[in-house]
Image 1 (tube, rainbow, N blue to C red):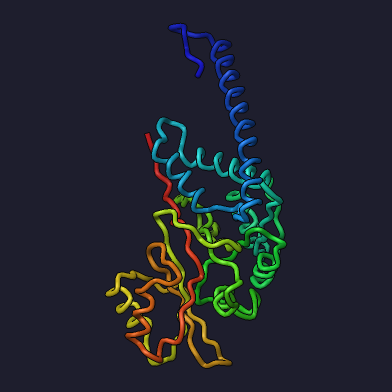
Image 2 (image 1 turned 60 degrees about the horizontal axis):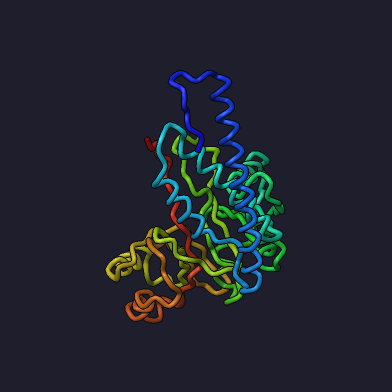
Length: 299
């Protein structure tokens, strides 16, 4: 690293030092890209997914932990998000399918969210419905899909049924929830800012600070509160994210967000079926994601 050698360096000297540091940063970026290319080749041989959001979260948490000085961490995280996004495009033909609903202001907000998270140069594929995003990822046209946070306020304009319910009944070859977007929450953002979930064809990976989304199908004989109470007794703290009634089957589907990384064959989830018997019909683990970090000033 360049060092200031004079007691009172001139402005010209300081600018020269900045140029020297910029050249070193650029050299390191080019060296990084060489390694990224080899990583892409290794993943192609092994069949691993190029999109590793848990690894990305661990990387950014490590940088946040060591960050010091007046340069803000959110700005640092933004730089690294651009580096990560550009690296994904170097590794493979990385494309993100984005839900772009009406009105236009909401659609533009989802586009901005995708670009901010995956990088300004990342290729985007727009879909006017949630089902369109699901198809793009399922059929391999997109590496990742960006979809709205599940809620009870589902409209037919988004799709005939909520995207999370479609995932739940789609069988074993469905995409999984793999990330929360954005990774860094900014409390200064306004109400127009949007959060979303990302789906991909790879299995979710643990980042050590995670949440899992599980869809439960049940009869009307058991309430949300009772399921949550029993789950918490088993060590599965949960919050309900959304509900959907399958009118053709007459059963109720409820989506729970559970604290922690829950594997698909978790014994605690199995125990719930022993407690509720036939009233709890099935559960589907839709995936996990690294919990977003909050913006903090680090000095």
